[in-house]
Length: 342
Image (spheres, rainbow, N blue to C red):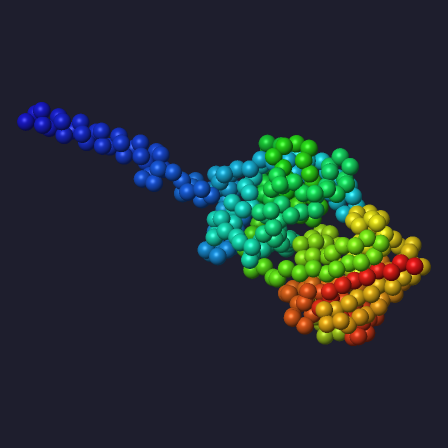
């Protein structure tokens, strides 16, 4: 009898020990699902990030973000005036891993990041998953084809330390895994990120550009340029509607000579002498604008939004608007822009 009891007690101790080992390994599943915040991580501290997607809303404290799979990359930027900030080391979480927390993304989605002060940027699926950025050589600032190593991530550390008060606690960065990689336009580097939303993307489009050099204005390029941190501008019409987009003179600057981007791309001297900007719509309507009438004017814009939303079908994808233009000079459905420098 004593032997039976001893054996039973030994079995119980073994079972308890086994349960303890299993619990220490994370429970009966054996592994934590990739991209999921560990339930063992205490949500201590304030919420620093809110995610919204197909599967609802999720909030994270800093220590919960740090428990997710980490990405370390070297990120730098090129300002709108052409100044390059060389890549330095940042650590954080890939944007794609964060969106996986709330249902993931597809080609039908865009991802909007909003900072504490309300500043926002929208990234396309192609930018997040296919590296579709305008990229630059950090040594020369020259534009080059984007590397397949460019990764969009939300950083919480810089050079091994928490972000400073001018950056964080979270900052959106685009980096590469090794020092000396490419840099991207500075407006993509959003400071004080506190909300990320997966949204439905609008249809892709492009406008043909013809001038000293041929080109196109497609949706990703336009969204890039129209951001508040880059060249975004707007105009409020007599009815109180706010139209937002890119000044027409800057788009003319992409094709008025062979320099397409950066400081000096717009040939102000040629514009003052006068040349025609011919705008053609998808229905064949043609409007001609004199460069002298729009030179340097921020509020004569190729608008892609009205009152914060997409343009209605009659104007999609772009409409020219601004003070001093007649109704006939404000066409929508723009398909082609031609600059004829004399």
